[in-house]
Length: 483
Image 1: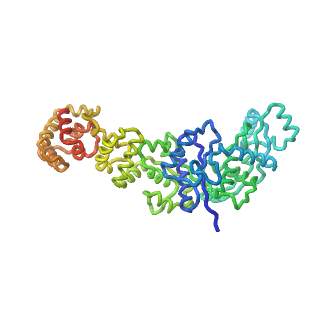
Image 2: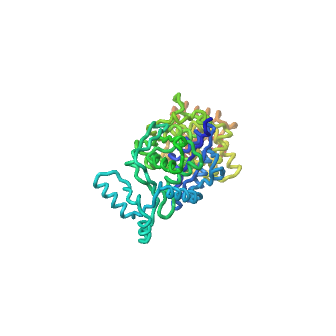
């Protein structure tokens, strides 16, 4: 009988989670759900100066918003907690002492200056940088002498001669010669654990079976395996590793703020749907097959397997995300679109939260659902409905002052004033008949002045529908004021 799949997402939130973090979390989550396994959310917060409570809560909120629910972790608990590393320091201290007792680790008293001098020597000799094992075999007397000199010590793990081999699900067999993996630090001089100790201990104690993480952590794997060995873990019980490809920007450089990468909270504030972000990030390094790109979260769960993750880097293209988000918005039911839009508007404090305003937004949404890319476009499109008189945008003032514009507005006013039935069909009939058929104007020329007069902008929801929502009196008032 095969073991239950247990995967973990273990960020160190020194800021808002970015798209690279979330792509990893998404793949972990999808694999756990696909296999019926467990998804563990663990926070690596031993660096308390950079990992703040605010960032931890932000990571939790982002995961919830994206719908990446976890089976064990913060706010959920579980049998292998606590799930914040800062609450597990005694566990790491115990294992560090065990490694010392077993002679798998040793105290290193080398000063930062000595280590820097060693690096310079290695650089001049064109040697690979790394610790030379100077403190590997210190006697108790030598250790006592260093302590009496006031030197503090880190704890280093001994790397044996030879190599570490393992099979990466994405990259195949990987081998590291230990000549290039020197003895590494487990515990700092102040007693705080380093990543390599904490991550390996936690993975063992939390019974993690699969480690899906970024390619940048591939080189840390032999160190992690060395800790497993010192903990007595047998090779057949090591987690399965899968190192995900880098996400690159449009310029083929590693993703950064300059070429596309921003925090997921930024995308949330811009009005992207969580399922759009998850859908797009799923396509960065993985494919559902059949050239399919627009998939639901349930389809992702059904289709996701690690062996379909590519080894080559993926490219983040904001325009593709925009297109996908627009498709997802168009696919929402009218009720769902209203709920998502109103919740977003209230969350961003863009319009006062009251029932009257919600009804105005509800009336507008059906005519803009096909036109918007992100939810943050709604307030600007809706603004003309919330004011008694509009301010004409700066770039349209020159056009509105032209003689021909005034003629168009006067003609429009003459046509709409007598209307008894104020609906889209009547408005379109009289305005098209007068301005396009009788006067021979092109639609763009004929309707732009009216659009600007009633909405204040040359960009707005569909004109006739906007005029219906605005009402006859306000339309006449605004056109008259423009004249």
